[in-house]
Length: 316
Image 1 (cartoon, helix red, strand yellow):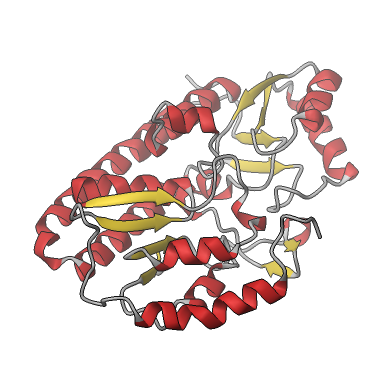
Image 2: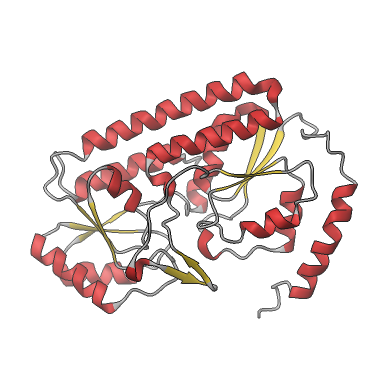
């Protein structure tokens, strides 16, 4: 254990103190001094949805720093304290943030905070075989990247809007109007993908990154092949690498896809071996500091994905 990691004793001590901290809070005060609701979202897609739907009535912050993998994020005591001061805690589901139960259990006595599973009511795709994740003794049986099916993203937007309405009913019309507008943008994006990914020479996403795009592939009738499983810190099986190389050679694929979260070494080796070029795909939850600084949005990231998918699969 490194020196800067909190010990179990400190964490437990903090948990014991939190009920006392909550008891001093005024449960009726649901707004910050500037009259904005305090919202904490775990990852970028949820953060971006919340700031679009909440608009000028909310102050949204992202729990995970840019370029951090949600699968193996280690919750710290100061994260718990930070979340405890918010009005809303938004996460995807227990498959994506398997540590979220700690937040919910620890803050259960806080009448002010509303934890919201934004993926509630969404059917997840099962993982099979070597795509199953087994990280930190947490075994995922389902693919958590639900927002990459834009119909799922619309349902997540509904869940966020409902939560905002629940804690701030005075502005319900405002939140519901914003949610409707955002869902229309998602529907337009969905249509762009559906049209853009027709008439393609290839119907397979060849991905030298971690398993994340099955929802997207499933929605548009594509095949998806990844050399890694759903855990971004896993190591790819040599057999999977050889299979991908063979697929590239057999199909004469001009490009394969990589992602920022994983060291591009494997992708570069495969590219050198096959002569294929490299194109980036962004799963949306691991954006960089530079992207955050320039005000990137979830929708614009997906537009970039579509451009690269069309180029890589040689779509008309």
